[in-house]
Image 1: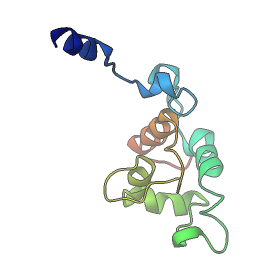
Image 2: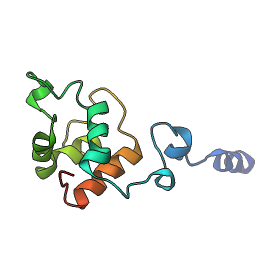
Image 3: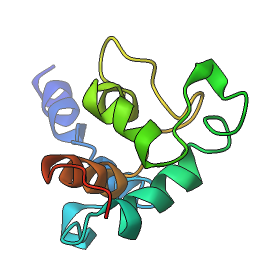
Image 4: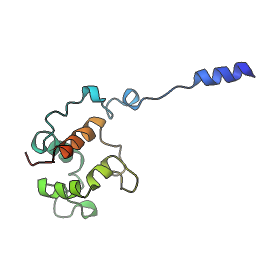
Length: 119
């Protein structure tokens, strides 16, 4: 009985998402957020992950993220970070997909923390 319990305890391990899924969760050590501006980094993240549904004349959920002014609305009301971090009370985005990479989320958060300027 004691031997079985010991084996079970030592057989458990702690999963680290960044190690298990390196393509979707880039560790902060490999993530450069030093130049986190709209034009240099944030725009490409939003274009690559959001525009397919949230741009154009009929955006999904009536949420248009195309262009700085539109994106800034969702930055200011807190919905952008809530949805991309899959926080409770928000619709997780991308819809039906995995969260953005840890690096992409950190980059957007850094841009917001820096005043989310249009530069």
